Length: 394
Image 1 (cartoon, rainbow, N blue to C red):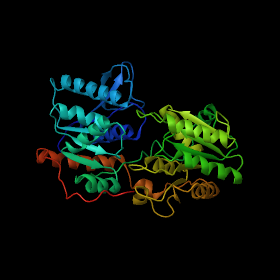
Image 2 (image 1 turned 30 degrees about the horizontal axis):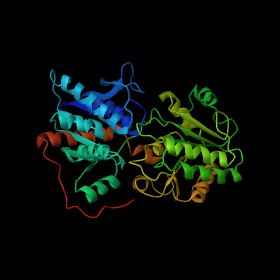
Image 3 (image 1 turned 120 degrees about the vertical axis):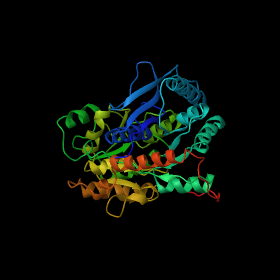
Image 4 (image 1 turned 60 degrees about the horizontal axis):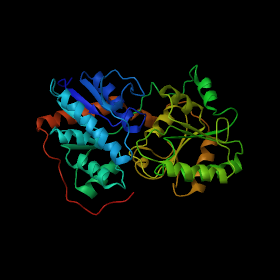
């Protein structure tokens, strides 16, 4: 066992987003390795994380939400900076590790040396938000990425050499083994019955390609008329309202009914305990994304016995092989529809796919631990930079 570390993990939200899941699961795995872990996030008074954690939790109190994205981000940076400033008057941490620009800017303002995980880099229309994001990456002592794709993109676009540390999947939480509450969960949400169910996780977003997925679903219903599309989740600081309105207009134009037990079910944010049941009920997970950091939902679906349709592009092509998933061209609704139909015909699997066992939070925590100690040994130097080449494209 390596030397015990006192670790602060920072995240931007208490809601079920990929980066927040990463922080909570990494924290749990680091705690199991004997480290002292504190998870820090901004939250309104009375709020709590969507999922219980055995880690110590510090919540930075937020004032009412800002009028736009930039003000919302500014308020969260300020709340984190204020809370950390008080916390650091009474205790010290060996490692500060943030998973977003909000925590990174708060730490930079306080003069703390930190690691920054980049799941993917958003391009923000607001110049202030974009500047905060870039600052949090450039001022980090070490940048980590969850995929080779984003390591390469950062190297090419900024010259930063990031360390790759993959995600994990919780094989106790996600399995094909039915649970007593599964049927009650899907009935309450109006999903399933005798219908084939296409599940999409993450809400309606342009980067998740939900409008093309809807077009593919329309094509699928020409072959499977009773098919149902379930769009689950969607808690986000970003405004996806225009995408959602266009999605709803597309659905109405195609004659699709929206609501519980209808053609399309949009659940909105879910109770954390509902998610495994949805994976187990679905006939296929659809993830034809245009931009992802890792694609954890596909692993969670496979662990739950559900086939997954993913985009034939990185990062999916990094960790999935032929036979693990069904591939689709994300720019072609016809290609997505064909893959969905093949997945439904293939049916659920009962054996745990080998790819799921290659990614564990325990292994991720071990890799993080090694990086933490390496950074400590070098006293958190400035990030290593390579020669900047032309920006690469996905």
